[in-house]
Length: 272
Image 1 (cartoon, rainbow, N blue to C red):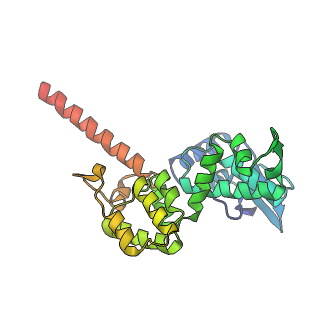
Image 2: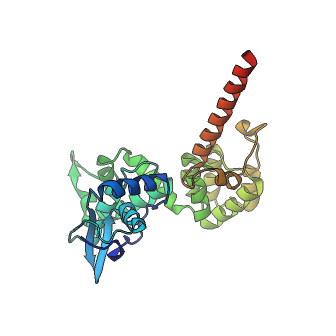
Image 3: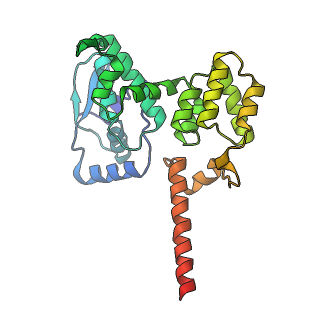
């Protein structure tokens, strides 16, 4: 039994600990039944580094618990990373950026352990394939997620918000940091994000060292077929009406449901 305050968060923990409805439900469960599943930590310095249980730790702190059950285990850095990632990848509603950095950390840990050179069916097994064995994602998709870690933070934020789709984001990750910064400025200026075909063209021009600011502007300012006669609402203006963890897609779904409910209600009134 250890004080939650003595448990240090895992270094470079890629998963966000959100103070949302899910945390409130966890707090209510702990309030009624206590912490049923021990947290996992390892000795570090004068204290302990938390490997698994960051949400339970925060819930316990907010409830003012003096101690929580903790399983303390000696483990190497690589073992700790793998356990930390595996214990969190099962969570629902993970952001693309969380998956991206988690997969990258686990891939590097597996390479350090030498597991990427183990033989399977007569061929060498890559580390991303090793990850895929314990994941719903394919090895190729894991590599695509890891590509997202090459995006500059403002662009990666747009991916998390759902404003840039996953496939275009992967293509944009091949642009230089300077090109990405220019693209970000134009996205804000034009209030438009690149489609998959536009992202592929930018990637091709970048490889030929021809992706100038003028070329980026010419591509991003093109009118897409699915953007004609479209009503645009800025994400920031909508966020105050929704929980902080809601993605753009979740907000859009909620708005459409409200409009559909209102339409049905009005239609019923007209039939009376």
